[in-house]
Image (cartoon, rainbow, N blue to C red; front, side):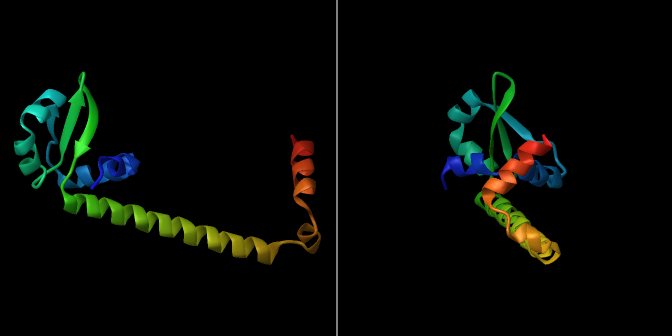
Length: 116
């Protein structure tokens, strides 16, 4: 799994999974992680590890299972947002006045500028 995928995940989702573990997060400096990489890989099978650089979190290393959980959470959130958008769109179309359907994009832009 590519590390860039981890960066694309929501920070909130990562923190939510870490918070549900109920334990203190193991923290290693980037030098420790580099020098003890094999041990780091073993540790993340049991719990996530925060990697720090200059005293600040630089990365979180998690197990493949936790990564799958994060991806499933992200996909569920994406589907919910899409369903919410669809429901809103249908409601907006149903409640739209007939004259609104005749507006062009240019008309809408002009009206928005007039209101500002």
